[in-house]
Length: 313
Picture: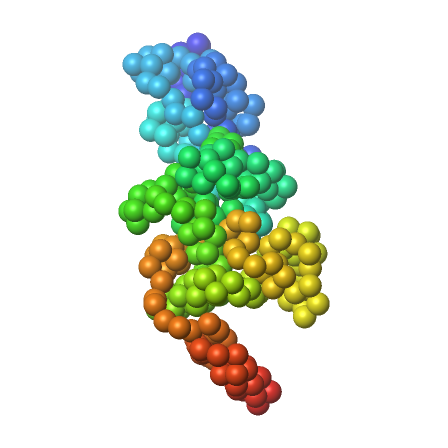
C-alpha cells in the first residue's frame, strides 16, 4: 500500500492550479524546498520529493525563480531544480535611459517597485567610488544592455550587474581618467543625437563651449533637472530654462553636477575622442540630423530654417 502511494506521488503528473512561480533562495534546504513546492500545488507530497532527492545522489538544487505551468511528476520537477532551469525576466535598457526610465522598466518586469529601484540607484554611488569619487548616484553607470534577472536576486544585485557591465565597457574603451567628466558629457551627447556619426562633432561643440566659458545650453540637462524635481510633464517649456537647478546648463556654466542619463559605447567614445572644429552651435535639421554653426548669426539662420520647415508640415 505504501509502495503504491509512493509511486502515485512520484510518477503521476500533477497540474499546477495555474501559472505558478516558486522562488527558491540560496541556502534553502531540501525540506523547505519540498514544503514550498507542496504549498504551491506543484507536487503531491513533500515526503515523496524528499525520498526521491535522497535516492538520487542528493544532487544539489539550484536557487532561483521557477515557473510551473504544465503537468509534471516529482521526477521532472526535481530534474528542473537540479538543472537550474530558472525563469528569467528580460529587461531592455536602451542607450540614453535615465534611472527613472530603468526604474519603470524594472517595475514593469515585476522585479520591484519604481521607488525601490530609485532608492537603490540614488544611494548606490559606493559601487563606483573608485571610478568616480564625485558620483552622486549611479546615473551614468547602469550600462545600456539586455539583462536577464530573476526575482531571487535583490535590486542591489541587479544594479551591481549593470555597473559591472559598465566596468567591462570602460575597460574596453580604456576609460580611466576624468571618468566623471567623460560620462557626464557622454550622457548629454547621448540625449542630443541618435546619429552615431554626429556624436564626435557634438562632443567637439561642447568642448569648444566649455573652453570658451560659454554655457552649454543643453536642453536634456534641463529636462533632467525637471525629472529630479518631479515636475517634468513630457515637454520642455521656455520657462523651464530658468529653473534654479545646478543641472540647468542655461543658467550655470560648465558641465552639470553629474550624468543625466546612461550613455552607450558610441557616446562614450565621442566624449573621449571629440572632433576638432571651431563650431559652437548646432540645431536639428528636422530630419534626424543637425546643422552646425560657427557663429550665433549662422546658428540663428539654421534655427529659422528649422522653424520654417516645421511650419510647412
